[in-house]
Image (cartoon, rainbow, N blue to C red):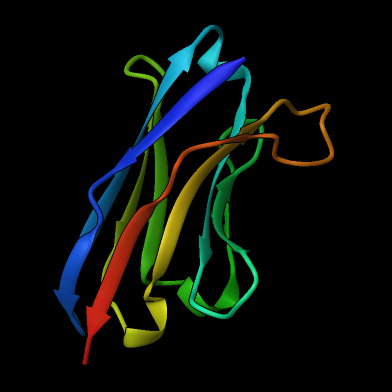
Amino acid sequence: QVQLRESGGGLVQAGGSLRLSCAANGRAFSTYEMAWFRQAPGKERELAAGLRWGGVPYYTDSVKGRFTISRDNVGSTVLLQMSSLKPEDTAIYYCAAKLPSSPTYNYWGQGTQVTVSS
């Protein structure tokens, strides 16, 4: 089991950057696949960026080229570097984890608010 806590959200102007951090507390962090989801007001939660087993990143189309996901297994953290932010990136961002054998992400943080002003 793993506990997740996000930090780094805030208010930023369009075109700016933010870095989100997810600290994991639990055993065998390196065995988990990690991802960042986001949920905008009135919309369903969507996967923004993820790291497959072996460290291969993947992104939803709307953030490709602007967001970078990375992990530090020694420090048990996952980062989401966001640049060229747009108002439509405004959402609550959630860190999530799952074991490779699980079909769904079943460990979640509490979320951190990102607001991009135009």
